[in-house]
Image 1 (cartoon, one colour):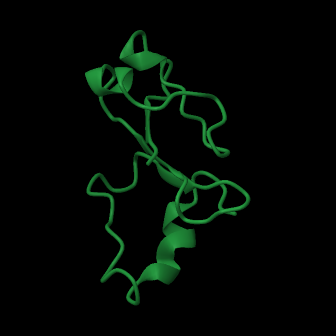
Image 2: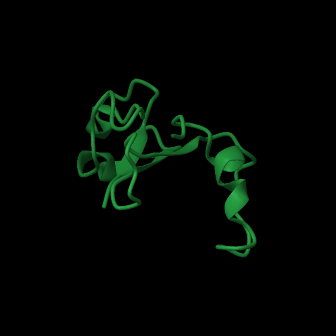
Length: 92
């Protein structure tokens, strides 16, 4: 089971067998990308998380929210009066 926040090191095993290369953060790593899945993972349920750079972002009102979504903190205050998290989360 991955711990939320360890995308680069944990997913590196996918390249080059399953993906040609893992994408690099164009911002130089100043924001966070994460992945996690339930303890009994069948590949059908997971959460992907990215930290939005903008202090106000309307897309935060329509994403998955919660303090513990498969070990990922997806709280973001829906882009209103951001607390610094600004986590955009999606699930299948």
